[in-house]
Length: 419
Image (cartoon, rainbow, N blue to C red; front, side, top):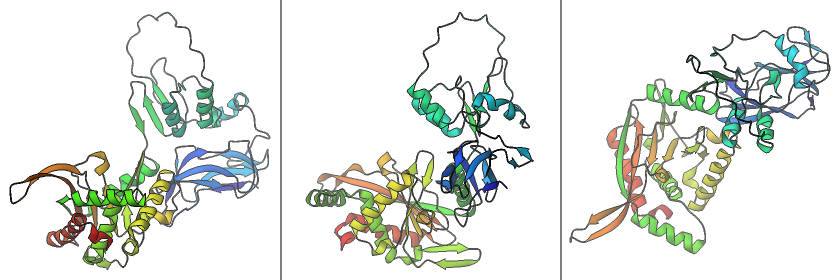
């Protein structure tokens, strides 16, 4: 009997996953432990390994589809074995051209509207992104995926062996203007005039859901405080030169926030219905921007770390977040979040709370400002702003201001951060 490959539950809160890329194709031999498909779930991409040996008889869930936990993905069994609706699977893998009639026998989805002369193309979202990056025209490619779908390897092959430019043909006679032809993707519809309509999946879907939930549930206030970081920049430069390291401004901010929270624990609260939760640990969520979303890996017990330990931990988490190598537990359990947009020149912004945290600190760009002292002398100072958003159900403005002042004082007197 064929083995059913089903959507695994890769985290306690996971409800569904998106099929990103099939690493094996129908007719391929599979051994136990072989990676067969990539699944995007809760912001991360994970490989699903085969738990049975045999032949990948049939792919049920196509690339770009959202499948609930325990939902059917594919069948693995013996060549010729009956699967699904009872139809026999092909005895051996067949070339794409020979497999086409069998594919056509499957119930077809309602066709998308296509203007006269339009062309329908099946291509996975990943292949489309790679094509855009490499500048590959896939409109005339023959796909090697199920039902002739263009997949990643087809684009990569086309990039290595580009087809010769076709000889220009005489311009056709003008025709009545029709609606823009449509290119059909798995999970996306691209209009030939440049617009793309694409289903929210994976990381972007999760981020959107959580941000909407946060702004809908939390009555928030954002307070902005100006911080003179002239001495911080001097100390950072001196330490980096003497010790041969590359501490960032963000490393000092993380350390300062951890220290300020230790002395202002009323900021470490959460709400659960009609219950107030006082958090025991200072676990700093650190927002990391990716091309298609946002991750918030967690520095646990940051108040117990030295500056160098925070530097090493933050660097490691950010690197692995961008490489998609974080474990699920590494971006869960924050009690306070920091979002730094200073490197992009942002002067001020209203960060959205990363629930169940009750507040988030936005860090803005450091800029030069002229300052006049009491004697009328003018000097240049480095100044940045911190933007603190908090849940007003749990934290009052004056209470939040005391915490903001604590962070400000530490950043303005950076030796206190290290002591």
